[in-house]
Length: 146
Image (cartoon, rainbow, N blue to C red; front, side, top):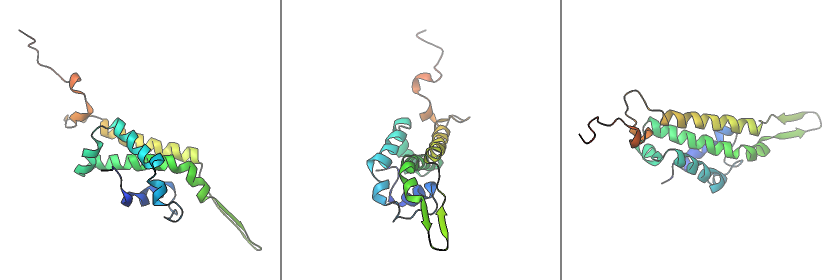
């Protein structure tokens, strides 16, 4: 099962531009392996139990989904900037819609994804998130062979 689904695509569009519609940025483009697949592989490479966290529907699962959505949007930013820039000149008036800097916006989205991933991987005070620390680095008993 995927970390994000078709119902998450409107939020990916909104992360890029609040005025994007499914006609502007189609679901098939977002779901393409170059965008959604690549983002999911990156998150799964860093958080090995990401699917279990998403399936549990907890706060960490929501963070995983947001990280994937931000990465998808970051990968799409250079493509979307061409869709959102519009200049129309009429006889009596001119209209120009401001666009965003795709490199800057992609960096912002990637930073947001990194912050969500760091929050998941950060061990808390109670030690409830044991998946964040490998077994080899836990405290061992002091009686070694004696």
